[in-house]
Length: 142
Image (cartoon, rainbow, N blue to C red):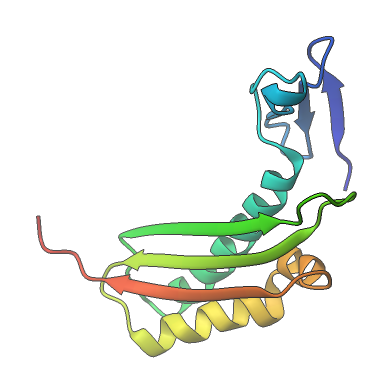
């Protein structure tokens, strides 16, 4: 795996690319001289958990012929105050799925992802506990 970051401005804005060649903008907060033109590095870690687990969960549920009409993931985290480095104190992930879904199959898919398959979660949980849950909603037919 190879990642390339190229500086965009004279401050903290970088454009990163991996093997997909899709650009990702990274920047610092305005409070330290950034221009708010990209995600913060710690946000990218949380996005990585969401993306990694989403791929796992969708793959597992597709194999089980489950119909996912919508899928959202909310991740809430807090970092340590007044520490360098400032690690995460907690991470809470909520998977919100909509569709004709079997509760036990969703539960199994979420657990498999977060406890076995998601490499990003496996790396991050070495420094902080990741709590997670899921919600299922059926389409109202509208």
